[in-house]
Image 1: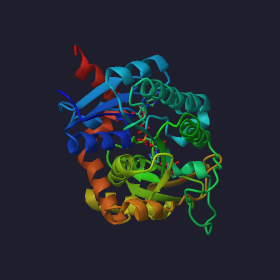
Image 2: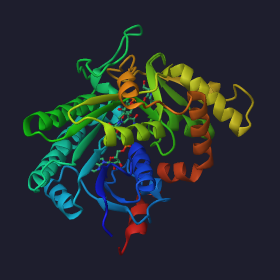
Image 3: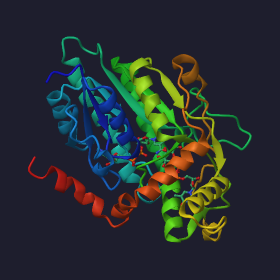
Amino acid sequence: MDFKRNIMVTGGAGFIGSHVVRLFVNKYPDCRVVNLDKLTYAGNLANLADIERAPNYVFVKGDITDLDQMRQVMAEYEIDGIIHLAAESHVDRSIKDPMTFARTNVLGTLALLQAARERWESLPEGYEGKLFHHVSTDEVYGALEMDGGLFEETTKYNPHSPYSASKASSDHFVRAYHDTYGMPTLVTNCSNNYGPYQFPEKLIPLFINNIRQGKPLPVYGKGENVRDWLYVEDHARALDLIFHKGKAGDTYNIGGFNEWRNIDLIKVIIKTVDRLLGNPEGHSLGLITYVTDRAGHDLRYAIDSRKLKNELGWEPSLQFEEGIEKTVRWYLDNQPWLDRITSGDYQRYYEEMYRGR
Ligand code: NAD
Ligand code: DAU
């Protein structure tokens, strides 16, 4: 079958990547979607069980740090667009193991850029119709004071954690390939995502899981840090819009103007889980346990996404209350998905599904 376009999504078995893959597979049946993922602890093909047999979907088990493999995949699938999400993404892990973050996020992004550049420059049409869309984070901008305004696209980079430093470095390489080689690249910087299929090491799924099991909820420091939360499907819709309508060489911030102090957010989660489980109000509040703060814990993130609204017309579709309700319901309705992760069983999915193919 001939496809109109061949789009590679890296990290498609992860949290946000799986929503992007699902959106593209369903919305663009005339495009082939190649999901390239190494399946680290964070990759879970069960996230894509509903679309894995779609005729326009291909899964490739691959490592973005492997330049030869990236060259081969670019050629074999005639990739003309890349949405690059593959990364190590958890700040706490980056504090324990910064080298892995530098290897994957910096060197992996560089290998992918290089493979794309070689492939596209070898074609008669060159960079015409090509795009390298790099998915980054608001954490590269550093931390805001409580009354310190919002991150804009022009805010100076000032990363503090090994994770954000590695993402900042990868962003710089992406822009360098645009400025030096004329490669059509763009960067998007998004705020904290929440929703289904998030690995339960991150605040929201971890706390939902702990509440249902009656386990302590470890709140870092005083719980006063502020994050700006966006429902993951709204991020995926923004990436779709920017991938198709964004300007090469440009940067777009993505966020829903939805700031929450951690402790206030945690209370909303407790209230919602207790209600849906039929517990009396306040039942799980006693699980809150204040623990030692995260090293270098950024005080506040908040994204100004007016450019995306004004230039491309994107707006979040969900109110936060609706998004949290949907999210809590999803984790409570999908307890086997959570249990397979906490037991380590989920990593056998690939072998079972892809054996003999
Ligand atoms: P995730 O940890 O859930 O998923 C990462 C995916 O990348 C996994 O499937 C993993 O197997 C894959 N991967 C890791 N190393 C790889 C390698 N060497 N080669 C190929 N695949 C590899 O991450 P996420 O939360 O979905 O984040 C996706 C991207 O979005 C990241 O680049 C992250 O920096 C960015 N981002 C995340 C958020 C958020 O709130 N989660 C917000 C803004 C930006
Ligand atoms: O801002 C975008 C970033 O959001 C992404 O780039 C990252 O990939 C993503 O992991 C996320 O980073 P955070 O560090 O903000 O997310 P996390 O869920 O780890 O933590 C959210 C807040 O909750 C943060 O202030 C730390 C706090 N926290 C987290 C955990 C896991 C706790 O208090 N207790 C916890 O157990």
